[in-house]
Length: 291
Ligand code: SAM
Image 1 (cartoon, rainbow, N blue to C red):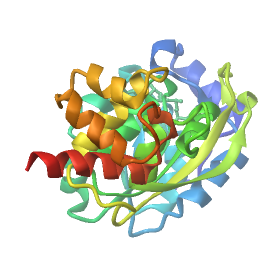
Image 2 (cartoon, rainbow, N blue to C red):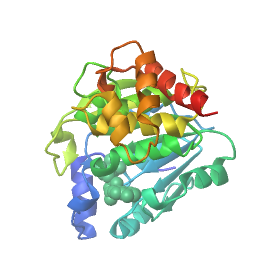
Image 3 (cartoon, protein in one colour):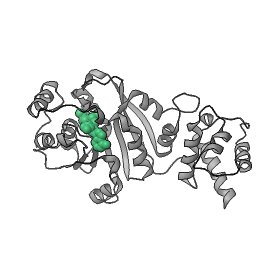
Image 4 (cartoon, rainbow, N blue to C red):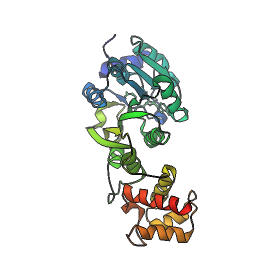
């Protein structure tokens, strides 16, 4: 098997020139050109020969080469058709890589994972396109794709949002989803000069280790996340008003007032001050009241 040759700026430039490749801003293309960062990601992802790795957005295959060295198999989903011939060259020496030319948001990832790995959870590793970080992560969680861990490069600000709690301006639906489904850990902060072209924002590698079982019992997950979204959609409003104004939730004014009162935090409490346990309690109360 070939050793990784990408990750060094000269080699990246050479391959991009050979194929006359132009970066597409709309696809969030910022390719990694730092071997130390690549080593850190691979170490944090903790991959071995028994693992199937799902990579989202392989680009020219830089991280894919590193992943293929460690994993049993790598399945990489890339939207940009201009990158496919490049990937055929850079990954030609690896027999354990499958490239799929698709939009990851339009794929049935759960089915793909089940076809490739049966019921065994996969490890997701990626330098994510920043414009769709949240839908990708939420999709993996909400579709219940069997995933053991997610080790990804994201915008620094998004990494902060993923691991914060009530009282912070960064706290929101993404923080609560991450807490419900996984334990977050920031592996490293990564400056713009580790990418080509350089992004305008700082980045961070975050590892989400997925829970075998969520930390709170929730009778209706979808309802709890609808409540969470409704609470944060209108941050300046009280929790009760947020719930009343939501077009996804259809409870009476009286039931909403009763449920909010039971939290014991006053009628004017805002959603942004509630913990995951309190959102679980609130949604379970609605379920109980309606059955
Ligand atoms: N992994 C490469 C690296 O680290 O050098 C590239 C990372 S770059 C930040 C994001 C990659 O995701 C690009 O290759 C881009 O074309 C791809 N991408 C963007 N949107 C996508 C989508 N909806 N589905 C699949 N891939 C996508």
